[in-house]
Image 1 (tube, rainbow, N blue to C red):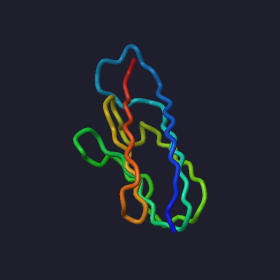
Image 2: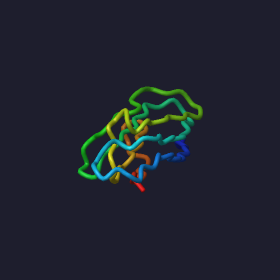
Image 3: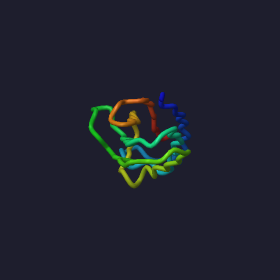
Image 4: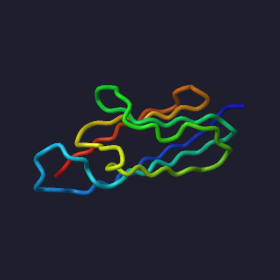
Length: 103
């Protein structure tokens, strides 16, 4: 049986016009994904140096739709480029790019 999934990324970033230092950016990113059959799901966030910033999900999940909300402050995410990788049964399924910036 072929594994089907969907993935949607919605980012809400707070804006701070007065900040010039690399401080954690407020706001959140919501990730929606679906699992068509019971699978071990792993969702990680990497920075642009390919260093893991957060392991958001790492567990066996039943079929269904899931939503994960990441608070940027919880992981000290500063302005920059991040990569979100989603694995099903230890196989890379999707990689998304997330760009956080102060404006």
